[in-house]
Structure formats: structure tokens, C-alpha cells
Length: 381
Image (cartoon, rainbow, N blue to C red; front, side, top):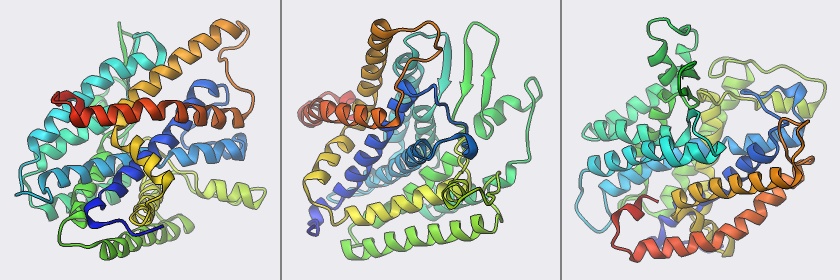
């Protein structure tokens, strides 16, 4: 691998974003065609086969890295390499509200093909995070970073706080910290799948880290800083998790063999993301960013395509999966089974690989088209 030229330094961000989009594709194929082998949060080690466990574990990288890179991209927008600093508030507000709108409409419809239940998931979270960051964008950068660190490091202290449905504060706490139904039993059930508070911290940290990609920091120094951040995050995780000190609701225990003990050690809560969850995923993300600083190969250029049109790929792949599943049910439906899907996990990975190859070409076409098109809305994809 050769060192990327300075003018291409931001390509590492698109490469990392492309990688997590493909990992996400695997997880969504699993959710569509392997749902009869359900996983809990955190996973039940004794009931989850190792292959499924590590497949799901790999998908944990997606949301934290994507939210972090969203904050980083906002800083880059506010501090263009070839121009004067500008406000990111309008950029963040427009895109944030647009993402919330997409979650409420196209994306929810893509999961079930009906609209009788509303799930507020990762796109809703990214949209709200952008809106909140817009409101905070006029604060000094170190204030934004400090608030982000405080939220990420401290939100697990709030774990003992809980509200029952109907209790005062339940709705706000469901949105902020505890996953659950915001509305249930009416014309339209609404479930908060991604409580937002920890994610606010992640996008703030991404914005704070944006200066690493500024004009004053060269590739070599940035790579060293990213390696240091990644190693420090994983070291802190090892200490906190190793001694069951803090950062995860569920302690790890020695299991029947080394493999299952390792699975239990790495079994973190995603909804909301625990500190240990974020240390693992963002720590790996920092190391990958450092690695991709020096990646200029065929595979990195392929990943860059997916990372340069992420919302287009996200929406299209969900509808491709929906249509494929409906056709699958129509051809091979079995009323005796609640879910129809694959019998083996390797079929999930194979299907994801085929879809990745198939969707590469329309994603590349859209990337090139939106760069030339005067339509502003295309930039949101």
C-alpha cells in the first residue's frame, strides 16, 4: 500500500464508511432471512452459536462509526481545506430534518412493506444528532468535545433510572436512554429502538476530532494520533471490562470454554450503547482510519464508492431486501413457519456478497451523477 497524497487524505473516511455499509448489509440480510435465529441485546451467549454471535458483533461497528464520521464530516464542512471557515448550522439542520423525515417514511416502509408500526432507528438517531449538533455548533470546539466525553463516559451512571409506561417522565426517558414503546395500543405503535442520549456524545466527539483532518496536521501525525486513540480506547476497555468495574450493565463470567468466555467478555449492550460498547467499536474505528490513511488499492477504491453515496445505498438495499423476501415467501412460503429464511449462516454472507457486487454499479453511477447534478437534494444521499 502506498501513502495517500495530501489532496486525497479524506478518502480514508469514505473507505471506512464504505466498509461499515457493507458490514451493515450483512446484518440486514441476517435480519431479513435469518430472523428465526433471533439475537437479544446483549446476546445470550449460551443460546447464540459462535458464528452468529461474531456476525452480529461485527455489525456493532456500524452505528458508532457512522455517527462519529457524521460529526467529523460536519467539522470538515465548517472548515473547508480551500476556503474560510463557515457555519455548519444550516448544513446540519437541513440534513438532520431530512433524515428524520426519511426514517418516518421511506425507511420504515422498507422494513415490513406496511405502515402499522413505526420504529425509530439509526437514521432517526443520526438526524436528531445532527439537529442537536447544529444547536451546539456555535459553542467553542473544546466545549463540544467536553460535553461529548461527559456523555459517553458518564451515561452509564444513569442506568439505575427507569420509568414505567404511564409514569411521568417515561416518554422523555424512552427517547433519551431506555429503549421501549413511546406509543402503544393506538392507531400506530411507535417504538424507540435507538435511545439518543449516548449518540449525542458520539457525534460531538466526531465533531471535536474533525481538526485531525485539518490543514495543520499531516498524514503521519494524524496516523499516530489515530493509532494512539484506538490503542487507548481498547486498553481502557480491557481494564474496565476485565475487572467488571464500569461501563456495561451485564458483567462477564467464565463460561464452559475459552471461546464462550471470550464471547461473554465481548457481549455489550447496544440499546443504548454502553461505554464498553463504544470503546470497542470506536477504538477499532480509530485503528481502521489509521490503516486506511495508507490504503490506495483496488479494494479500498471499491469501499470508497459505497462510502461516497451511503444514503442512496442504504435506502436501495433495504427495498431490494424487501422485494427479495416477498418473492422468496411467494415462491417458497410455508404457513407452519413464522419466519421464512436460510438454514445456514453462510447463506447470509453469500447473499450479502452477491448484493454488494450487484449494488456496486448503481451506487457508483449515482455517486458520479450527484457530483455533476445541480439538484441540491441529491447531495443528501
